[in-house]
Amino acid sequence: MRLSRFFLPILKENPREAEIVSHRLMLRAGMIRQQGQGSVSWLPLGKRVLDKVCAIIREEQDRSGAQEILMPTIQSADLWRESGRYDAYGKEMLRIKDRNDRDMLFGPTNEEMVTDIFRAYVKSYKDLPLNLYHIQWKYRDEIRPRFGVMRSREFLMKDAYSFDIDYDAARSAYNRMFIAYLRTFARMGLKAVPMRADTGPIGGDLSHEFIVLAETGESQVFCHKDYLEFAIPGEDTDFSDIEAMEKTVRHWTSLYAATDEMHDETAWNALPDDVKIDARGIEVGHIFHFGEKYSAPMGASVTGPDGKEHNVSMGSYGIGPSRLLGALIEANHDENGIIWPESVAPFDIALINMKAGDAECDAVCEKLYAAFTEKKRDVLYDDTDQRAGGKFATADLIGLPWQVIIGPRGVASGEVEVKHRRSGERFNVSLDRVVDEVL
Ligand code: ATP
Ligand code: MG
Ligand code: MG
Ligand code: MG
Image (cartoon, protein in one colour):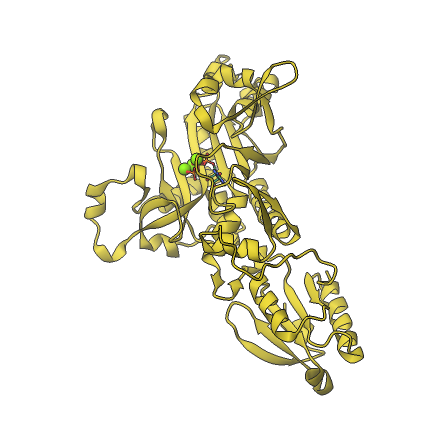
């Protein structure tokens, strides 16, 4: 992509309305436009990162055995009356009427709808386990939308729903998602700690929030510091090995980690001070087992091996891809801008032409652009006539992992300068080596 053609509306000034660094940087780097209270438009740079984040989520959901579907954003109130949640949900639900005066709503989540899909088709235990997910916009009429994508009203969610014959099978489904989540966040370069979370009126011990530690986080959390160094399950994880899954989840829940609502002062005080992390955190994911909460009232049952009808045991599993962009920036920035982890960077390389219009510089840049593209590296080629300082500031602000800098002096000596955004390290490489060096 050529910067001269790329829609990248960079802001020079710090937007006054942005209270936290991720919101400020997303606005300044032209990733999003604030469209109103709690809603944003995704501009090309932001959309590219959002897509990368979703691609990782999708790969790990699929790997764990979940299957992608897509449900509508607008739902009928009748479905929610069946579960009893239409009245219970309160003001966070955006309620709408259609032209026939029917009660509709913009989905804040999809338990009812997916249960309706399930009950329409699945009749036998032989078709279980089943896990269906989608990545779809949600609307919650939050009292205080703020911090840009962190707490918005319209936001993207990956929500998965598991259906099993009994508690034990549902627990295995929970374990698979737990491990898929560990892998998902790790692949984005984030340390997300699973913490015991409130299960509400349903009870039980099967609910974890995945929390990224950050000063700007809205949750108060408490955890053992060793979690930050625990090894992440590998790509070769066998999701059909029920015992291995259980073992991994037990390991990952063996030390203290709890959100505010689940915090146990006595257990906490028994820990030595030097292992305690008492901090703020961002909830980037939440997994939850709720058994028959929806299957019983909505009649989602299957025939079991015993020939009897069983209400299915269910769980739901959310990740907020749009909130994740905020969390990623909170965790990866410096005073000059964003520092994208390679796996989610909008482009891999900023190719900076220091003297656009100079025949030799242009020729070298075009050649490198083609060579990197050939190697499947995504390049944002700064072919504009801005001055050098401005180009560097832009490259630092938008945070691509590598900067490859082409100027007349280097061209004459057959060398280019390379800057690694994260370490700040700079080095010279010969022109014919650079494509192999920056990989
Ligand atoms: P919070 O405690 O922050 O209000 P929640 O517990 O209400 O979140 P869940 O119902 O567990 O959210 O939804 C699953 C995921 O969706 C959350 O873990 C979060 O990543 C994301 N999410 C929820 N609400 C928002 C929001 N208002 N803006 C952006 N992402 C959100
Ligand atoms: Mg909420
Ligand atoms: Mg929450
Ligand atoms: Mg939650």
